[in-house]
Length: 312
Image (cartoon, rainbow, N blue to C red; front, side):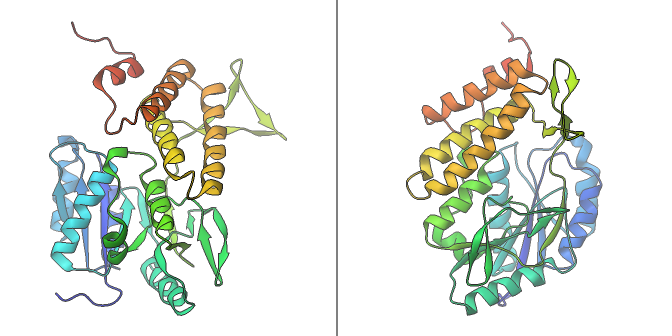
């Protein structure tokens, strides 16, 4: 079909999804010209979910192996553009649920901002459940997003053609941040989509502990987002990589993002569980960023971080 102005295709990256993905894909399909779910190397346990998606008319693209979120999104975008030639791509995580008016509000934001003379690179969700997207001031009456999550991006294909696809070298973590920084470096605005509500799981929170006892502030427990050592490796490596890459073009963004990451690392490494492994992962990640290493972490490091022994 010929693309219509405001036609949106949805790309959902999935890894070992459960049945909740079915409802999320249906909510997306009701607002789009088509939905592509990219299976990023899932185990056979998810075969029934993918079969049900196909029965619902969703396109399922199977990656030959787990290649990371950026590669999954890029494969899905290519599939969607070939099938439907949309004007915009909406990217989602498997655990994200769109509000029924999400796409309409996103396109309204584009139209309003364009009428105000802004060049918009993409728009993001306004909130993830009860959590508002952190902002970075306003321009032309619209809110600039600070460092939005990839789930909920509505990206014109013209932006992808101008700045390129998602950075597959990062594998996971920081892929959305890198794309945001690259779009801004191209002189385009990254805006919060007015009224774009998204339900999205923001990670597993655990209590901060000191000498085995939960910490409290003003009578309320202090919690933090727990991540496995391998995730902390990617967060640390890619965070350092982005800081070096965009320090000159956007020092204020780099400084604010680095402070937020430092706060999170302090809680999870200093006051959480698996302290030794998490510290090892963070140090290894920063070291690999210094050496300009990208891609998947090595099998040897993965074994060390998991505590498994190498086979002789």
